[in-house]
Image (cartoon, rainbow, N blue to C red; front, side, top):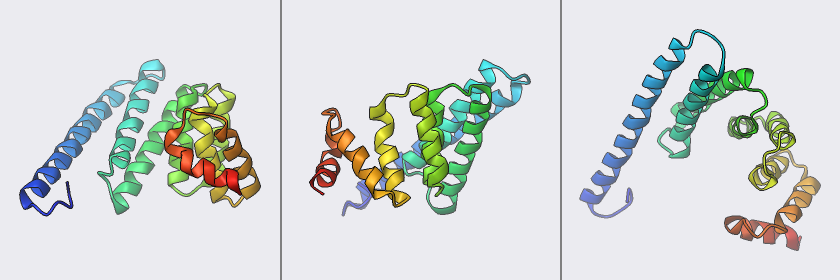
Length: 171
């Protein structure tokens, strides 16, 4: 809609994006206050940090943050993910998020370690291996990338990745 030739459609699209961004920023503000109110470490503080990490990630995922603002949102999400991991170190989903953030911030080695930790904690392979394959590719470990893509090829539940899987399985 942002590229529509009609100015009315473009304005509507920008308005919708602006509303999404405001909604997320208001939720960040509320959740920050909630986190500040959690004076002791525990499950409530871990959950508040996780929600903040999710909200900052949502700004990036929805492409509402660009350039330096995107980097800031990624870093804030990483900070809150680390806080949540400090309080809940055995939560596999947090390690997956940690890996995604590290990869987005350009640290493939640390991202790989986070992905492997998520797998070790029981995160389903179908959720982790696509990111692990991407990070091994970024690290130029093409043999390992090929092996991971072959593993992905065995799963029929990944239709969006099928063209990439097929490419790697032909090589």
